[in-house]
Image (tube, rainbow, N blue to C red):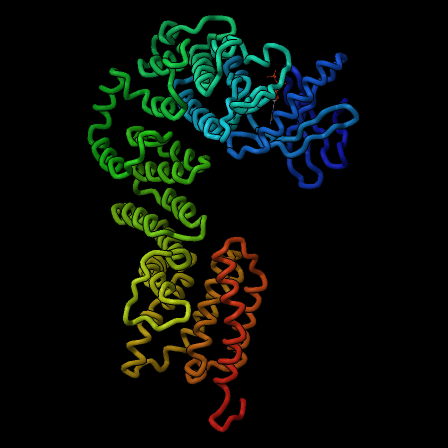
Length: 573
Ligand SMILES: Nc1ncnc2c1ncn2[C@@H]1O[C@H](COP(=O)(O)OP(=O)(O)OP(=O)(O)O)[C@@H](O)[C@H]1O
């Protein structure tokens, strides 16, 4: 028996009860080790050993199932504890309320909100259905969905979810085996019928029906929603009716299609369409033009979202919640289509493109297209533009794997020409960022731009003999770059900067010396590079390669510096 203030396993301090279901009590607990809140689900004790065994089995199935899942709308299970006969499941604490308690206290919900929750639920159900083998949730209902204060839904209670083809069903009494009457699809209650993902479509339709009408399907039959709330749209009525068709073949074949319709439910409403035409006549033309460029597959959850021209925030949220990078990218591009002057979606795109350590040619093309199209609008906010230019410049500088076309002005380099292609692509962005006098990172942007310009211009200068005096300032900029990389804590930036400095120290040490850089200064720079190498933990193959290059380059650079201070007589200075 768990009591308030009890410390479980020297770690979880029970703070109080936050909910109760048919078979469990859920407590809020503080993790004394991590200083973090968890929800601890305690299984109600049962005097009947058979029932208790069934409950334990169900929970174990739930835990095993969730452990293999990774979706923002599914709370993780982090611990399973047998505490003197009490079975406790420790999981992510979800701040918020269940949709059931929201209907109970506030009645039927706004159509736009229900559509938004529906799309999010389609996203998580689609995620489950796309597992191999597919997972059918089988118990979608308002009490199994929590809504967080920022409008995100979370699916709780995986007690009867089933991996297709698995015979090992948890049996917790008939109702739990079958799903909840009213929400469960008819085939779930037919011993001869097979159950697939369309059962979840049905239950989602029933859940949305309840949210829109306030009529509880456990007590009342599901009817067309406008019989109960005539003010609802035709579009929404059609969606709910199709999802809750008795025959699985008449329902949506999958959640992707259902989500698409939920996103567009208003377009399907004649009255609303007239209103839209009046209000958005001019605007739609522009949005549709942008959306046409997005050309995202029709089978996507978030494909042709352009017509929902007013929900920029929605798409930003979809992007940040999506576990699939292609979905997230499409969401941000849609957000750009809606509000092309906002820099936020571009920043998110940069994060997505660089997550795997490489900005590919295709990604570069996509980004370059949208940012070039909207540059004029973006420039209207000079500070935001400077920050975005700086981030864009860094993306090119550190991650661009595209065209390695070589300019004859590039210095030859053991690392190949790619570094110079990256610098060339980054330099104008850095120059733009550096030109904003109010931009906090202005001087660093200038360092990047100057380093790029040095590298792009040094060969012709050497050729015409006008390079003297260029090396001293270049050395200073390399020092700044390495120092900033050391502070930044980003290993990709660290190793790239280290290798750039090492390349320069191998090629130009005599030039640095001639421009007045002393030996101690050069040695200090090499020490900083050594510290960067030490602090880097290679998490990807490419980072590992860069680190190995740096490790190999360091002694070469050291000996190049030594050589630079050996006089023609052979004496070291
Ligand atoms: N991860 C969580 N974070 C916060 N609260 C939670 C969490 N999980 C459950 N709850 C709360 O506890 C209540 C009971 O949880 P849950 O529905 O999972 O229990 P159950 O015993 O499996 O219910 P059921 O009767 O549906 O079988 C929920 O209604 C919710 O209020």
